[in-house]
Image 1 (cartoon, rainbow, N blue to C red):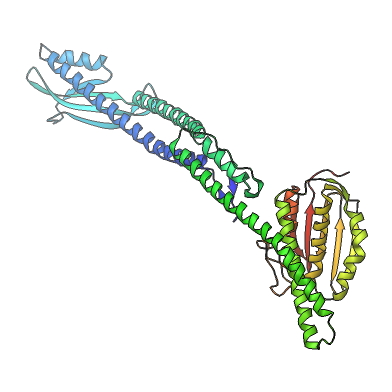
Image 2 (image 1 turned 135 degrees about the horizontal axis):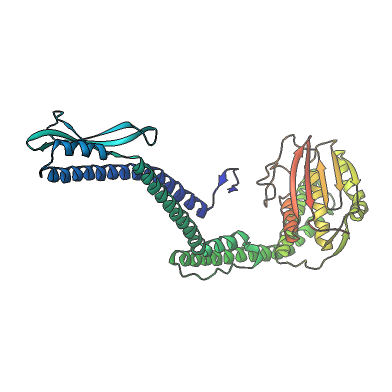
Length: 434
């Protein structure tokens, strides 16, 4: 059993087919067992009746030869199950089932009784023969039990055999599924599917290979385009910024002109930040920051706390630092700086006036908590590129996307939580620190 993303319980394909087969087998067994029992019982009764009629036929044949009334009395005396009595008005063979007291068993037991008209020396008599069915019930029960045991053994064997065969047959499918689950388009590690002789799985693997190859090519093309575009934009943006600075130095600027130049300067600054962030994302995806060294986050935060306090001053935001333990990680210094800066600036940018920021560290985690919107953010879009909770915000929507990328690159984990009016981002460093 497993659970899907909506919290619903799911069942593996093999288990589902085996479960359905088992239910069907149990239903068939429950129906077949009593049917087999009653058919066996009917057949035994039928054979018993045939034997009774055979015995009666043999008696009728023997009684034609000088069978006297004294012979009849002796017959009745020494035959426990057969009795010759006077004519009871029976005109044809009649067999009935009755419960009769058996002196040997000392209880009532089921019997089949034959009533048949016979003629002995020209005189009419009634032939009565009874047959105990107790042995029949025991035999039928034994046969039925053996049948059920054989069927159960057969069903269990079929289920085990079919499950093992199905597991072997479906192995290439589960191998493909595992590789697809582990595949990441930005890691440049295409899956290598296990060759299979099953046509459907082979077609599935080839279709997936073509799909992955096509989408990987598109992804690389888009990534190269963004990187090239960001590089090409650097020069015109720098020239644009220089010209704005030159214009702002001209004498006799009117107030209207100054405001226009200030607005242009803000827009160019935003474009520059966007361009730098796109370049940074491109470099991260290309594994440009592969050099790692020990970094103590507590020291970095203390060192740059004045800078961030200055950034938070415009909103009168108070910053509280709670260092429980020294937090040392092994990471690229540049990426670590970007990670802390983006989390810090995110807490400032999306904070409320007179709000607060709380920074906590432990031996494995760092948490940035801040006041802000009174409702929880959309976790499904929080780390997407160009995603903003407030469209009017000054940011470009790449800060948390870059944080997420850095976290994934280092095999860390980041979580978001909203509790007691605080929005908290926690980075979990999944290794033992020193």
